[in-house]
Image 1: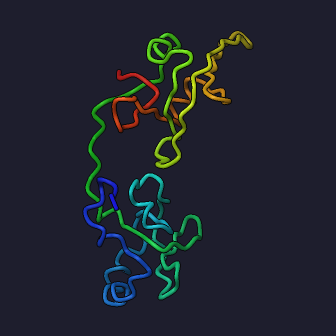
Image 2: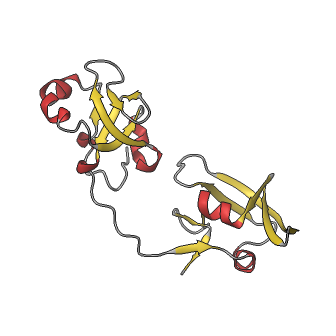
Image 3: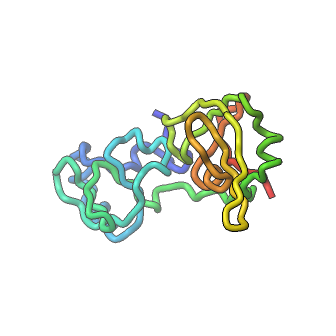
Length: 179
């Protein structure tokens, strides 16, 4: 299984299924109570840490199937990795802003298929056709809608909530341009 780039080793992920680790490391685990980290019920969620829930470890519930209690949501999870076990985030080198309509039209053409997904939602990619766009003036403000498949999206919505994949790469990128 491929892990998120920030996770050094699979062994850094605490699991309620590893009872030996929970028992012998109970003291170390209790040192993490009150600290921030990432929670999940599926180990596969750690392939992209952005899909895990982020919060504070409230307690360790013993030998239960969902042992790691997150304070903010009052939920219990099977897996937990504390922030201190993660590699530091690389600083963002590039700053982006949403496309203007003309920039979007230069990049994407009507009838072109677009591979896109909600930001960070690995495995939920969509491959749909760009059907067109429309400008609507409402209360002296112009709104632009982009039609992809059956959906209509504003340029800001595409930038803030979605990312797209160029056909010549495996990487997803924001619906925007570098500043």
